[in-house]
Picture 1 (cartoon, rainbow, N blue to C red):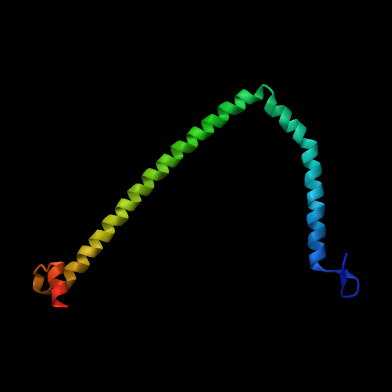
Picture 2 (cartoon, helix red, strand yellow):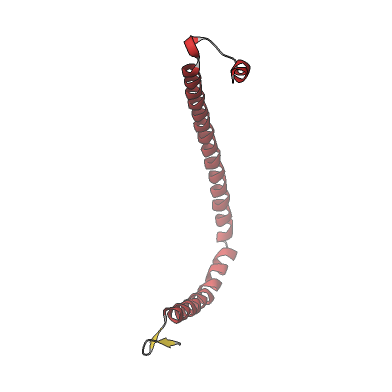
Length: 109
């Protein structure tokens, strides 16, 4: 390890050491548990797992549809609110309450 300040390791060397040590630990655990996980997935539980997986995917699709509907409703509400504010602002800009077309407005400028 690189030493700085009287024999103390630098923070970069501590980080690299921890990274390497963590990689070794995770690799060892993976080698120990990977065969057990693979046996569980390859066995009779595979059909049960596939049923649960397909049910999970179906539930997620339904949740996405519901979220899409809610978002569509919220967007419609926002558009309505924007239209209301826009019409109120237009009404405030009209002099003496008479309607002015955009063409007349451009011609007056």
